[in-house]
Amino acid sequence: MVDSGCTHTCIDEELVKKKKIPTKKLERPITCRNSDGTIAGKKDITKFVKMDLNINGHNEQLDAVAMIG
Image (cartoon, rainbow, N blue to C red; front, side):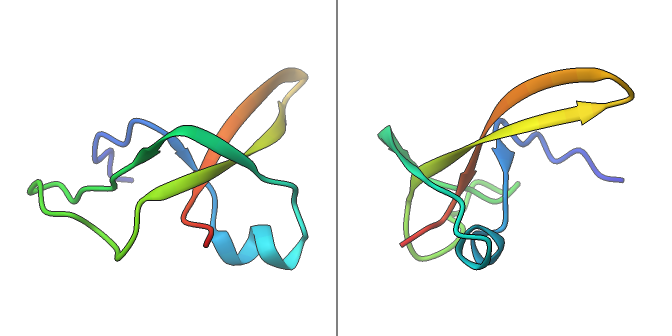
């Protein structure tokens, strides 16, 4: 496992599309950067999804971002 310093919870955009998960617009777009500071991808992240997470009885709601166009 590698912790690259990701500051957001991420979800695969194809999964969001395939499962028709509702999205919401971010107030401010996020520019995704690689560990060396260069810009990753061709576009900013502009949407997120709300996710319910349950692990061993611990429940939490997360906002997960994805490059959804």
